[in-house]
Amino acid sequence: MNAFVPELKKTRGKYRSYHTDLKIAEFLGILPYDIRCQIPKSTLYNFRNKDFAEIFGMEFSNLTGDVIALLEEMKKKSLFSKMLRGIIRVKTTLVAIKDIYLKKIKNSEGIIKEKIVKAIEKVRDTLGLERSVRYFDISKGTFYSWSNQIKAKCVDSPVGKCLRIWTGQLTKKEIEKIKELCLDPIYKGWPVASIAYHALRNNILNVSLSTFYKYVNILGINLPTARSRRKKDKEGIRASKPNELWHIDVTVFRTMDNVKAYIYLIIDNFSRYILNWKVSLVSSGKICLENLKEAYMKHIVNKSLDPDKPIGVMMDGGSENNNNIVDTFFNDPNISVQRIIAQQDVIFSNSIIEACNKLVKYRWLYLYDIPDFNSLFRYMEKFIPMYNDIRPHYSLKGLTPLEAYTGKTEIMNKEELTLRFEQARKVRVMENRQHKCAVCPA
Image (cartoon, rainbow, N blue to C red):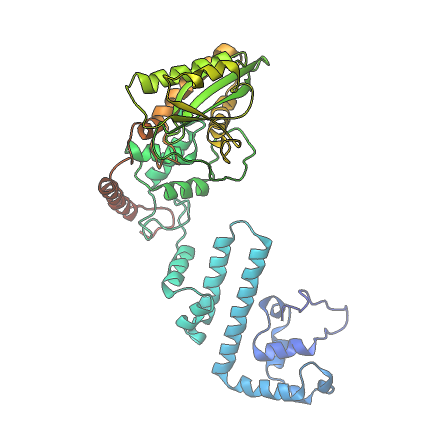
């Protein structure tokens, strides 16, 4: 019946004419409301009580005389007529939902829930609640939950659910704490996962990572970060323990005075720990060699470590890493290392340290105005300890690189984490039950 024109025009000085199918639709009680409201009540009454078998030329209509007779017989069966109207209403709602999906309407989830609830409310007395919810492939519990969400919208809840009914959602204090953490300049450049793990580790906020992500998205918080073109992630080479595989690389950064600076990094594959770093105005094999020697002295010799097999040092095939000066390090019989050229000696790329280079620049350096080389050095001095010792990493399941490098395996034991979540949930439920907003009943 949606094929009917939305507006019925009337010629001046003449009575309006109506299509026969429109009359039959009113006779069956399935004429859409937006059409019915344009037709006089007396005319609608005539449609509902008309004998369509008397209309001349009905045999040429899409609805034959036999069909009309059958429809009239069905009309006499009140319950059957109601059920038919109910099924048509369900079908209309399903078509509307499909249309919403195809058009990708923003906030479509809430719109779809409301349409489904309204449709079920109108047909539940005729079709029965159990059958009605089955049409939409939901349970009765889900229907009641959605119905309460629509009837008891809360202005103080970012998800629109009444805090006194859905007591398990985060409290206003917890939501404000998420905003405060995400907008705090201390965590500028930190990804959401790092902030969430930091809050959990320091008992600032006891919520799961998925819940933290959910509320950040609902609140529309956009964390400041420089834009970068992200390539599709691929699983690269992975070490099974610290000091099994190192990565070295050089990346370029230009300061505001247009001076090109070179940042030399060495990181541990297993822990993502930055073992040593250098900043220079030149690209030099000598600096690369110094960086390697310092890292080996600091983390192997000074700690009296004796690797059970040579440490793999992965690098790209460029001249900045492969030259006669750097060769002296790998040829030294007193140093237990093995050079690995990415995508030559192994099929893997040097993506671990390339990702670290991006992180240094896009989540730190590019977020600030760095005027000159000396300022760049100071910013790097500030970044490295924060990266290694303070900022939790998603890939390390909330550990810092230093913790992973020194052998720690989890941020806290499961029993402690479960206890903290349970205590936070009890406090949350208690606070939400006492909450009152403008639409809450007294």
